Length: 162
Image (cartoon, rainbow, N blue to C red; front, side):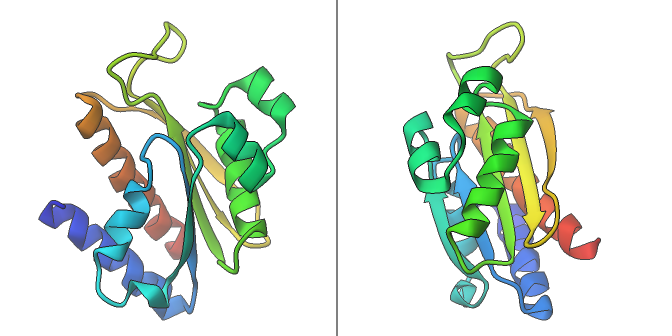
């Protein structure tokens, strides 16, 4: 893990600890990369409750309760789906803060509407509405996934500052 990502994970952990909050992750395109970055930080058991790797649509439905109709109409890479993922992750955990990601890391799988590098992210505090955004990251698969992990952690910090 890069030093900048390690520092970002450290800052997110310190912010969660200060607020007495626990984090849950719901990850598709990163395959657990957010949880891995977090657990590289000593003491992360004090602020990470659990992580869900929900790569397939079936796993999003079964583990997080994402509505199959939403997946059919919006597609897995959509703000509506990542919002549903944060809601499901909070329902299925003891965490106070959720982050969810779904995207097209490449090298294939893109379309004109959703090219490779398109990633949807969402963050949510328990009891509040989720906030989502769509990003277009450039680079190869590893670079898209690393940028997604970085953006996910930056969003956690922003949510805690709000």
